Length: 272
Ligand SMILES: [Zn+2]
Ligand SMILES: [Zn+2]
Ligand SMILES: [Zn+2]
Image (tube, rainbow, N blue to C red; front, side, top):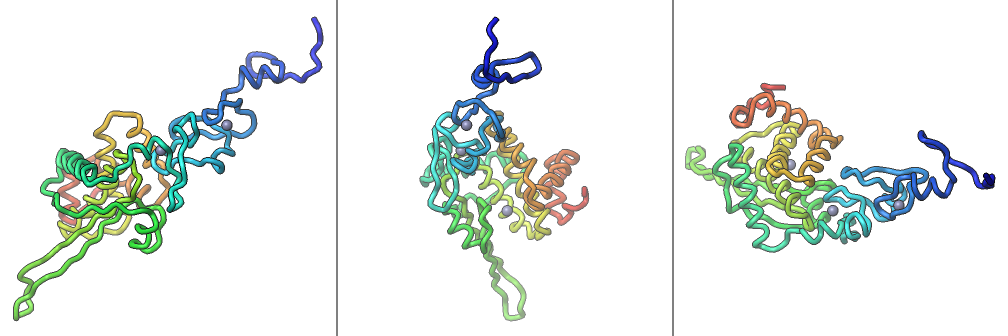
């Protein structure tokens, strides 16, 4: 046997010539295909990749995949700064018909779990992140917004004789169908809360509205939905993350109809 001058690497099953180890034993990067030596990361989909790709191509803001030719057919940076992969972009909702189809799916799914009579004429406007954060006063991470205007007509004695509630729903542009549906469902639950004159603290409000997104993803049996539910379960935000997980526990305990009834009657906190 000839001694090799190169160094050897070992793993649990023995020693390897360094190049062989790199090329045949080390797992490969799902983004660039090269061996994963050194530091690597894993995205929500289980793709393993060199950590440096995260600052080079980034993670898709919609589907949470590492962007690369292999994982997402590459991607681009939107003019509002968001990283969007080609798969999500191909599937993005933008036309009037796509928006109305989404509305129909969302209202059906919400009715399925017990939210009836939601107004199907609320205007839905698709805007980019800069426009959305201007409307909201600076939060760059939101994907949707419901604008609510209330006015009333009073008689000569100052009594309210007529109430007007007017809504506009704004949804972030370039969202793929399923994400768009989940955002729209969240916003429609804001409309539902306004319609029922419920004004909870933000962790209850946003947590509850996120149950709309949950209802969408939970109603579809595919990997994308499971991953998005996983992303929601890990969201560190006190309202959209913690608030959501808390009220989801209520849902698991009470079921939809009891939870809806409590929230409608100002008793959301009964199960906390
Ligand atoms: Zn790589
Ligand atoms: Zn994507
Ligand atoms: Zn919200």
